[in-house]
Image 1 (cartoon, rainbow, N blue to C red):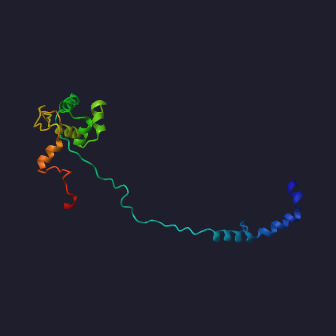
Image 2 (image 1 turned 90 degrees about the horizontal axis):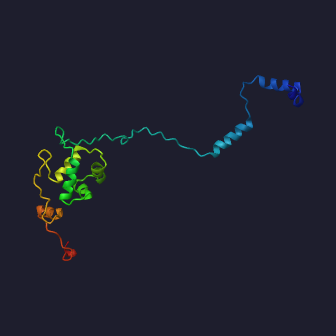
Image 3 (image 1 turned 30 degrees about the vertical axis):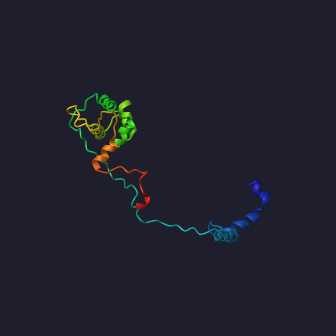
Length: 177
């Protein structure tokens, strides 16, 4: 209280209290109102858009890939990895060509053969069908991929089956096309 008396006298304090006592606790200042109005006029209007439409494509990943299990009630031999490696060596097929012909990612086959990562039975069925290998009997069904030259030329066999002759680009006349 001593510090207040140095700046304001008691009569001045009483006058101030009487002046603001009748009004509520909110003090209205005209200069601050004008300043606030000017600030609001200077700010750009921001339009708020509420999107009430339902988004149809969000979390629409309900497509579940179901692949049949061809070896569901059959026993798969424990040495199937060595069988696949032997089939690859006997037919002169590399890992990438096997993956390309079977439409499988090469890292899946590589991790299965060399890193002991399990593989799906449908993928195993694709690999064995490529080599025409029957898992139950352990024999080849009809190995049309094996040639005497130890080369696999699937492109020529595919062209023979489709009865389409290969096109010679040197004799091809572009104007006739």
